[in-house]
Length: 149
Image (cartoon, rainbow, N blue to C red; front, top):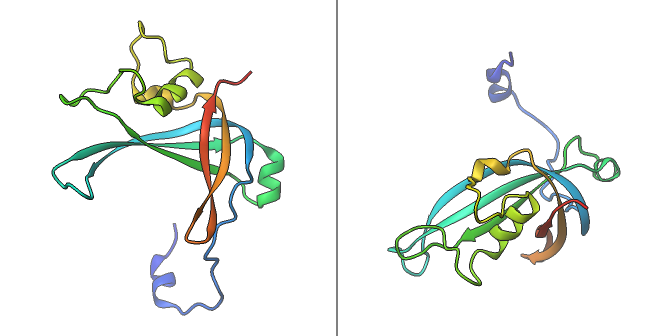
């Protein structure tokens, strides 16, 4: 057990990193480590409520771990889930494309078979990682998910 008071009450010297080296762009084998849903209030209209899905992918690539000098390399994928007026997940045309791609990559996009968000955990898929600029810094982002070939 750690003595947390030791850390709280002692002085420290050294500089902590302030930037995370982004995962290089490319396609990686990934294991879905976690899936969370969040309820968000609208920014423009606070009476509107949105459903956000956050998927944590563990990238299964030894050379990537070596390059980034990390024991584990994870990347988050965030997207909003389109809902109908009644609050159900919207299955209509041109809705929930990212959710549909994730379900297809996991083998869960059969319209006749029930599914749930926890069923994503542990599934092995391929993620396509790219970069977006945020406040002048490149940020790694999952642009697509597909089934492993």
